[in-house]
Length: 130
Image (cartoon, rainbow, N blue to C red; front, side, top):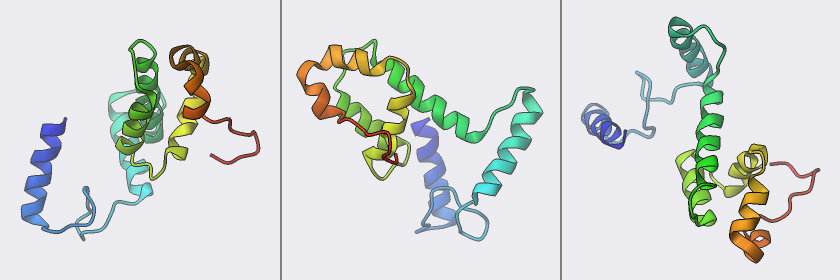
């Protein structure tokens, strides 16, 4: 995938040098969320009868990666920082949401990280926004 993205970037740099966004519309602006939703729906429905949204793919990407960590020896901070960056999150706080929806992850992490667990993943109060 990285190689394909690099090739795409090189081609786009020839067409629109200095573009602000990686994927741009014909008028050198970003695609709107409506554009993404509408086009995802058209493509998905043409090949699949089940329901899905583009956002479902983000959730799946995060959860599959987090679940994979439980079977590996892992450095949580490095992995969560990489996941956060790869998803385009500005802060790790945005990525914590996925930690909360993966079943049993906290107990697995606590076992693997021992005392450093509370430092790595501080307690989040129920009334805090993620």
